[in-house]
Image 1 (tube, rainbow, N blue to C red):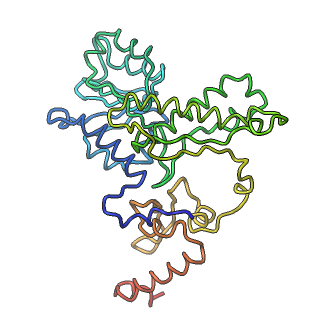
Image 2: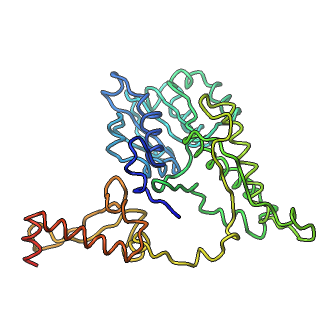
Image 3: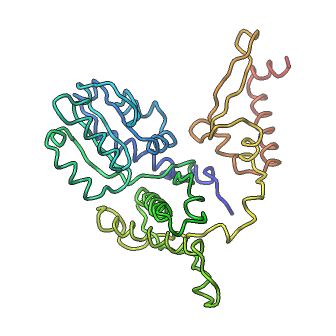
Length: 353
């Protein structure tokens, strides 16, 4: 049985997965950078392609502004110097990103006054040494931290790692000799591990073993070994968190089950009959956003209006998204009838139609 966000919404202190992610970004990362001096001028939030997706899926722009951020920019785009403002970098710990942010704040004419640097996953010792080697940049770094948050929270109970080429990198004909294969497994494992860093959970890692481990006569393919290799990589990352993160559990608190599609081959071609599936079928949606033409206030023309189907914007969506279409339609009709019966303006509008 699957459970929707609404099944837990009545719990007092319960926070769903997206709320936990949002709180970490807003209160662990952005809020500590606020001060009376810097908040008056505002700060610049600089992100890369992945961390921009992470932030936009978890936080509203207005909530980010409330934490003292007045401007958001892409680290790979040209930026205007703002030497009186502080900058917050939320980026992946890649050599390219480190080179760019070091260039931004080093020398006699830095782009920003100070830099608060937050990496989405653990940074290598080589890159840390590179940062320490530049005295002018080091003097302007107000904070340097690992957020260990490198996943995209698509809703209250789900996330993706954002690897659009994973199928090709993991299962292509030349995957066995491709460096992209091992790099993809490492990156996926690293991002899955950051989920448990956010949840403060230390899981038993269970996986589907290759067929050859059960039957010696069966030939093992590279694809058969992917769950095993991914499980080992995840465990390695979690062991590092166990040793480094102060309040990380020291004993197992939950279970992580790693499977591949072969355990349920029919699921991808079965269409769901839920309210969520119906909306994605019938509406021209981009993620959870869709645009609809509605009559203008004057009534002479129509105007485009943007809607967000998310728990923060639409409680009906939260309640019905996982319901069967027939059940959802019946409950929507009931809610509409109750609303019209209690609202005089709605009654007038309904009668006029």
